Length: 310
Image (cartoon, rainbow, N blue to C red):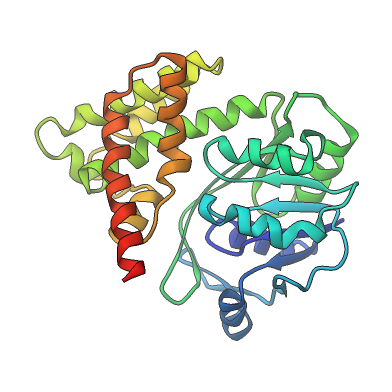
């Protein structure tokens, strides 16, 4: 199966590297600047044990001239429209598209562009970040992928994708309710993003000050209420695990959205928090803390845009 990975950052680079190491036919669609780094240094995984280097097959916009069997979408939300335009020649009538973005808005966009029948749901959980040299630094051993048909059916196509992605150095599961799984990850990501971005610190730093331990659970309650109203209640065990995560003393955990904020970069505020709070209003769910975090991050976005315009 010919696999195209759109993006070679912390997520796509990691999973694509593992697939390449497992002997799968993998090509990365990247921007020219990223292509230069990967050609010079290789696709490097660092941080746990010895460094690993993969010599990736690369294409840039304009190089694609035929469809792939499987397209994995791993870019951030603000890069998605341009990435889909670049990747259009790679998506044919028999192509399966699997996105691994946070939130849910991207699923609507992909369904509209390629048809819901071409698009699977997907969730990844991995502890990685892109360092200053363009290498992928692993922050922990977690590496998990979930896929499924949007309507939950066990199709032949889904089995073929499972075979293509399985046994490649990360955990893979087929979920009979992948849309719920996407919502449940969204609840976790939005809670952590709002917590660390609003209070400008790691989980451990936040819970170390008086009252800090109450904020994470309060944000979680708001996000979970939106999922509940949307028809995807978060199981009690997951709520308990997330509560423990966002109240863990000594934890250096932060959200990637917060790391972008701290670095002075644009963030995925609209995709992760703006869309969630908009759905909350449509569903009649009050989310005052999530609204506050969204407002603060939007101010950051305005500043970034203003500074870039000079």
